[in-house]
Amino acid sequence: MKVSARYVAVVVALSLASIALFYFLNLSNRRAVEAKAMDLAISEGQTIEKVLGKAAAGLLDRGDGPLIRFMDEIFANDQVIYVALKRSGRLLHAASKFEGYLPLGSEPLPVRTFSSPLGEIIEVNAALRDRSGLDYSAHIGYFFSAIEEIRRAAQRSLLLLTLLQAAIVLVLVGFLYSFNRQMGRKEIEIQKEKEEKEKLQEISLVTAGINHEIRNPLHSLYLSYQMLEPRLDPRDTDAAFHSLALKREIKRIQDIIERFSTLTHTLPVRKQPIDLAHFFFERQSAWAAQEKGARITVELEAGARLVSDRELLAQVMDNIVRNAVEAGAGSVAIRLFTRKGTVHISFRDDGQGIKAEQLKFIFDPFVSFKSKGSGIGLALARKIVMQLGGTIEAASVEGQGTEFRIHL
Image (cartoon, helix red, strand yellow):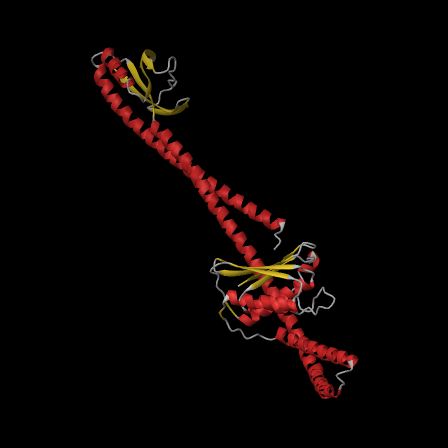
C-alpha cells in the first residue's frame, strides 16, 4: 500500500507535537521541584538566622573577640564559603575560602540567595546591638548542596521522562502506522475478493450457458463417434489418424468445460496426513512420464509434516510443473520446508520467466500469455490453494526463470 507524503507529514507533526508537549510539561515539573527546594533552603536559612542572632547577641556581651572566634568556628564548616562581621557598617572581620571573594549585599536581608560560579549560595544576616548601642551584623554565606543535587536529579528526570515518553509516542505511532497499513492491505484484499466473486459470478453464468449449449451436443457427438468408430477400416491410416484426432479434441473440449465448472463451484476438501516421501515419489513418476525432457528435483526438509487434500494438492502441483515445462524450463526444483508452523512449497524453474507487466495478472481467470492457454489453470490453482487454507504467489524476472511459492 502506498503511503502519501501528506499522511507521513501529519504523523511526524503529531509525534513532534506530542514530544514537545511532554517536554514542556516535564520542564514545568522540574521548575516546580527546584522552586520547592529553594523554599526549603530559604526556610533553613531563616532558622539559622534566628539561631545566629541569639547566639551572637550572647557572645557580644563579652566583647568582639568571642564573637569573632565563633564566626571562625562556623567558617571551618565545609559548606560555608565566607563569614563576615561588621560594626557600624564597617567590616570588622572576614574570612573566605576563595581569596578576595566576599559578595556581601549592599542592603543586608535576613536571608538572600544568589548564583555564583560554585552554584547557588545562601547568605544569612543577623543584626545585633551591643550594650553601648553600636550596631553589628553577622554574615554567613554557605553553599546549599542539596539544591544542586535536586537540580541535577530534576534534569536527569526531565531527560529520562522526555526520552521515555518520546519512545512511547514513537512506539504508538509505529503501531498505528503498522495497523493502518494492515487495514489498508485488508481493504485491498477484501476489494479483490469482492471483485473475484463478481468475476466468478460472471464466469458462472458463462459456464451455465456453455454446459447448456455445448455439453449436450458434444455428448451426442461423442456417442455418434462411438457408433461410427467400429465401421472404420483399421488398415486405413488416414482414417485412424483423424479418428484419434477427433477423439482427442472431444476429450479436450470436455476437459475445458469441466475446468470451467470447477472454477465456479466450491470444491470438496478432504484433509488428511500426507506421506510426503511417497506423495512426491508418485508425482515425480507422473511428471517423468508426462513432462519429458525436463529435470524435476524434490528437496524435503527432514521431519516436515503436512495435513491437506492429497488430490487437490497434486492438481495444483501438476499445473505449476506443466506451465514451467511449457514455458521452456529445462529443470524445476521443488523444495518443501516448515517455518513457524507453516508449510512452504517452492517451485523454481529456469524457464524464460514472466514479464513484470504480466506477472500481476497470471492468477486472473481467462488471462493467458501462452498461445494455446485457456487462462484457467493458475486461476484454478489459486482457488484450490485458498480452499486448502493457504496462499500462492509468484516471483519472476524475465529471462531468469520463475518461482511459485505455496504457503499452507
